[in-house]
Length: 181
Image (cartoon, rainbow, N blue to C red; front, side):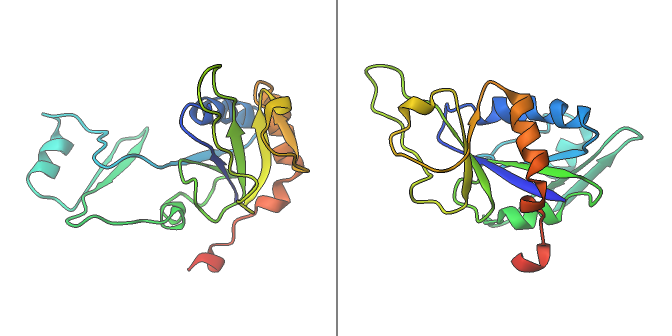
C-alpha cells in the first residue's frame, strides 16, 4: 500500500483536496482509505443509538457491522497518544492508497497544501523549509510561496494532475510497517 500525508495549516484546503482525490483515484482503479486526525472529544455516534448506549454503559470497544459497513469505536480510559502508524495498522490490508490528513508532524512523505493568506492578514506559515518529509507542494499561488523551493509544485485546483503525479511516483510512497514497529 502507498501512504501519503497532506499537511498544512487550517484553512489551506486539505480536507477539500483529499475529498476530491478519493473519487479521482477510484476512477484510476485504486482502492483508497483515509486516516484523519480529529480533535479531542469528537464523536461519530449519536445519543440514543444502540452503539452510543453501549459506550455510555462502559464498553471499551463497540463493533457495529452490516452487510455494507463495519465501524469500530474504542473508548480510552486515559488519554492515548496514538501515532499515525498505529492507525494505519488498523486499516484493511487490501488498499492501494492511504491518504493521511491532520498529522502535520508525522514522519511520512507529505504534500504540503498551502494558500496565501487573504490581504491584510499575517502570511500563513509554511512547513517545507524545515520539514524534510514534505516532498511536494499543492498550491494555487506558487508565485506567493515565501521561500524558494526545488520541490514539485502541484496545482491545487487540478486534481487529475495530482493523481497523475501520485501514480507516477507511487513507488516512493510504499509503506513498510516494519520500519515503524
